[in-house]
Amino acid sequence: MSELILHAKGRCLDLSTPKIMGILNVTPDSFSDGGKFLGFDQAVAQARLMVEAGAAIIDVGGESTRPGADLVPVEEELRRVVPVVKAIAQELDVMISVDTSTPEVMQECVAAGAHLWNDIRALQRPGAVEMASKLDVAVCLMHMQGDPKTMQIKPTYTNVVQEVTDFLHERARVCEQAGIAKDKIILDPGFGFGKNVDENYQLLNNLSKLTQGTDYWLLSALSRKSMIGAATGQSIAADRVVGSVCAAFYSFMQGAHIVRVHDVQETYEALQVFNAIEKYR
Ligand code: YH5
Image (cartoon, rainbow, N blue to C red; front, side, top):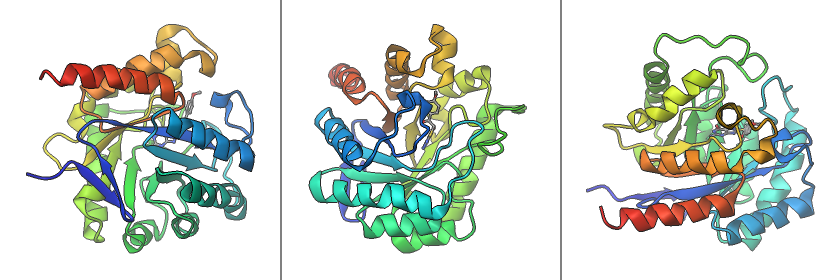
């Protein structure tokens, strides 16, 4: 029987019950947080609040990946992310994830205390898979059709669930071949990344299929995304909290091991209700 524990850089995360990854944006244009830029002090304070509210992982991101966004120079990304990772590692007892696609950035972040590489490009940049293997980090591989600049123009699939699954399994295979252990690999359908609303909901409805018959972990990241607004009619991201918590609960029901969210306290309450129900399975 394989253990339900994710090991990364000397930290253990018990995934026998789902865990919450809190989003920490250190970008000047994260419109899902109302466009406010988190400077160093604010970022560390926000991380502290998320840990107190029940986050087991903090996901630090310095590259804007919203639809249509421009790329951020590596130096700028390093300037934003590394000091925050270092401070969290020193001050807080939490797993640290970094939302980046750049091998150099991940290398510096691991030196600063990071444990998990969260890559919306599924380690497809040159040298990324080799770097992940060398750093011995856990990895989250996400599906995206196209790139952030153009992905929402006209996504096309014949079978979105099958295509996303095939892509993720292929990327996981490449990682394993490079020496990354199965139990360090997390798969994520990438809600909103080159998918229309229907495709996003087909994926959510079939979420458990993405890792069925495998030993990979499953991550769901729907927090405040436009698919939630499409269902509730809430056009402002900050007004999508209730819808996001409901989608997180459905993700728990589909076997998601990790949910990536903005609203940690609200999602943690939903998780506690889920755990109370699951006790009687
Ligand atoms: C993801 O899905 N997404 S950054 C638009 C929003 C709300 C939120 C206004 N990093 C993912 O969170 N990492 C991002 O509506 C991610 N999976 C993983 N693993 C975009 C984001 C967001 C965008």
